[in-house]
Amino acid sequence: MNKRKRGLPVPSSKFHGSSERGFSLLELLIAIVLFGIITGFVLVAYGKVSEQLFMTSLAYETALSFREAQSYGVSVRQFEGSFEYAYGIHFRNGIDKRFVLYADINADSEYNEGDDDETGCLSSAEGECSSIYRVERNNKIEKFCGVLALDAWPGGEKQEECNVNSVPETNQTITTLDVSFLRPNPDALIRTDIGSEYKAARVYLTSPGGIKRMVEVWNTGQISIK
Image (cartoon, rainbow, N blue to C red; front, side, top):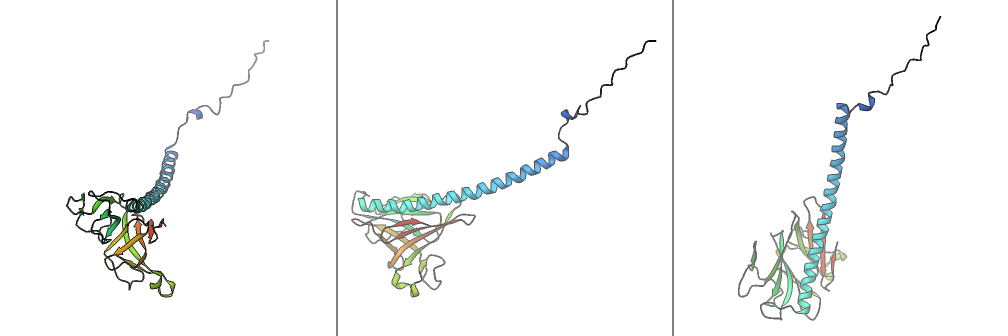
């Protein structure tokens, strides 16, 4: 009698079909949530870093404006056909988005207000406005100050007279700040509407997120960023 050969049964692959399996709805939702969280952290970090970079750039641009006035004043840049003028930077209370580079036609170490408006320098026979610097990206000038001379510091404590928040608060409030330069010295002439006995001038800058920078100009002509 013939015996029938029985072959071994061929097992079906237990992996069959699993290679074609896609993401479940739950897995997809988890991936989306994780992607959103990571993207949020990246955007927040990028926003802070970019804000710091823009503030640093603004501080350097402000410092360079002082250096430009110093260069013009020492090298005697022509303005309205004359080479005799000092050059300076002017800040005014209530204007926190721009400041002015001016030529001191009247030789009084002050900028004649009214020579500019929101559009720029106005055309006039005796206008002192040379150009206007604008503060962009919602940043602003928080305050500007004159630092009193050393002999005016009781106990050695530095004192400032500012357009807002003077240090200490009992100090007078100023409305203008002018820092000018006249040949042959690179020294800075620092003057406010209430006096000129200042050792340095300070301009405080701030961003919408509260990042701050300060530009300082000493009467010796040194310019620094902090």
